[in-house]
Length: 92
Image (tube, rainbow, N blue to C red; front, side):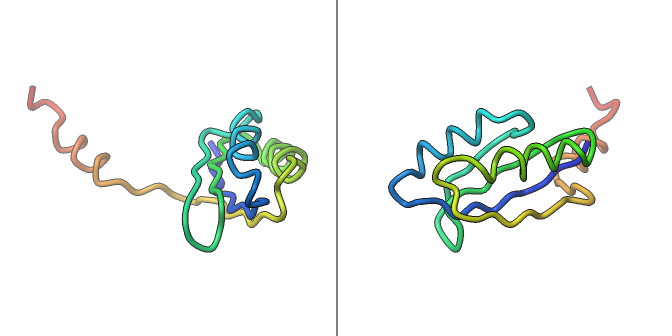
């Protein structure tokens, strides 16, 4: 599975509508509105790089209200929950 984090600058008066339109796209797992340098962060999960291009360049970037995007592709996931569950095996 390929995971990408897409930072989205959106029209200020269309953030809720833009976020929902992005969330409705194939490959988009979650969309967060946030404070700071960007308006929205979309989490895109697909199986192949070609699908990533379709989801972001072919879909997300074309949603009404999206001004610009920056995409960060994840290489590896780290989580303290994963570590804790590994040590809990067989303790039930």
